[in-house]
Image (cartoon, rainbow, N blue to C red; front, side, top):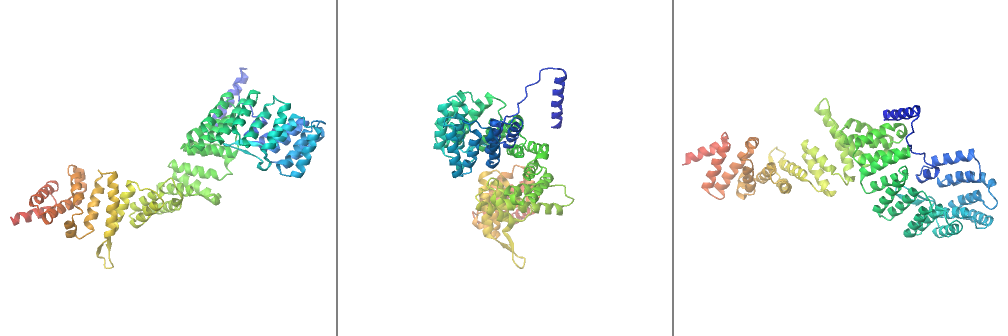
Length: 574
C-alpha cells in the first residue's frame, strides 16, 4: 500500500520536472457534495473557512446552512446571527436562516413570528427566501446508505413545502435547486411520480445531472424498484465518473440484495473517488469484503487503516472472523478474544461461532491432553452460539466432535437439539446418530453383565435407514443396520425373527468382490455368513441354500475358524 503511494508521488514529481501535462485528478468535493455524502464536518470546515476569509451575507448564511444540514441548529443560529447585520433590506436571508433553526426545533412560537417577519420584509416575493422556507418544511431530505429520510422529521410539512416552493418557482422558473426541493416535497407527499418529474425538470434546467440521477435512483430504491434505481445510479456515474455518492448508493443497494462482490467493488470505487477516510466508511469497506468472502482483502484494509480504525473494537471482530475463515486460528482467537474484552456488551452468537471454530482448528499442541482441552473450549463456544445461528448447523459440528471423542450420549443429545431447532440432518448426521445409538445399545447392569437396549438399537436402525436412502452404496450403513437388528436380540431370537437377514445378505453382496473391503470387514463378513447359514438351517430349513452360503463363506474367508468348524461338523454328520 505504501509502495503504491510512493510510486504515485514519484510520478507526479517526474511529470512536474519534465513539464508534461498533468494527469487529470479527481477534484476535491465541494460543500454541497460533501453534505450529500453525509460528510458534514468536512462541509462545515469549507463553509466556515470561506465565511471567515470572505465575510458576507451569503458566506455567513452558507456556514449557518452547513450546520443546519448537519443537525446542529444552535450552532447554525450563531452564524446566521453574524450574517443578519449584513442582510439587505428586502433580502433578510440570514434572518430567514435564524427563523428556520426554530422551525426545525419545533419551536412554533418563535418560528411562526420570525417567518412572518421575513415574509413581510421580503414582501413574499423573494424566490430564495421562499425556497429556503419550503426546503426547511421538507425536513431536509437526506439521501445516504440507501435511505432517503428527513433530517428533521418533526419539521416536515409536505403541503407547506409544496406551497412555498411553488411560490418560489413562480418568481424563479429556471432555478434547478427549487425543482429538486420540490421533488423532495412531492416524495414526502407520497407522489413519487411527480417527484421524479420535478427532478427531471431540475436536470433540464442545468442541475448537476449526477446529483439528479442519484436522487431519482433513491426514489426508485424507496419504491423497491431496484433495477431502475441501479440504472439511475449508473447514469449518475456515466455523467460524472467522479461523482462518488452514486458509487456509495450502488454499494449499499448490492449489499441489501446480498450481492456482496458487487457491493465490495462499488465501495472500493467510492473510497477511491471520494477519498472518504472516515472510520465508518473504512469499516464498511472491510465488512463488505468479508461478506464477499475476500477475507484477505478485509484484513489488509484494516491493517492499512489501523490508525483510523484502532479505536473501534469492531475491527477485532472482523479480523477475527476473517482469520477464522482463512484458517489462521491463532490470529482469529487473539482478535476475537480482544474484541470480547473490549466490547463485551456487543457480543453476538457469530463471535462465539468463529471463536469456537478457531479453537477446533488450532493445532500444534505438545500432547493430546492439551489438544483435548483446547477442543473442549471450542465446543463450549460453539454450543453457546448454536441455538441462535439460523444459517449454520453448528450442532452438526459439535456432534461430530463428540462422536469422534466417543462421547456418544452427548453426540445423540446434540443431534436431538439440532432437530428441535429445525435443522434437517444430513447423511453424516444420520450416520453418527445411528452409530452412537448403536454403541449405546450395549449397556451393562450393576454386575457388569451385558444388557441389550432394544430401543437404542431401533433408533440406530431408523437413523441408518434414512442415511441408506441418501447413500445406498455405503457398505458400513448396511452392515450396522444388520448388526443393530442382530444385537437387539439373543443370537437365536435374531435368527428366528429374520430382521437382520436382508441387510447381512446385502452387505455380503456389496463387499464380496472387493478384496480390500473383505479384509477390512472380515470379522463382520464372517458374522454375516454365520447368520445366513443359521437362518437357512433354522427358519427356511433349506439345506441347499445353507450349503451354498457355507461354501461361499469358505471361499471368501478360508482362514476363518468358525466357518471351518461348521464345515467339519457337517462332514462328520454325513
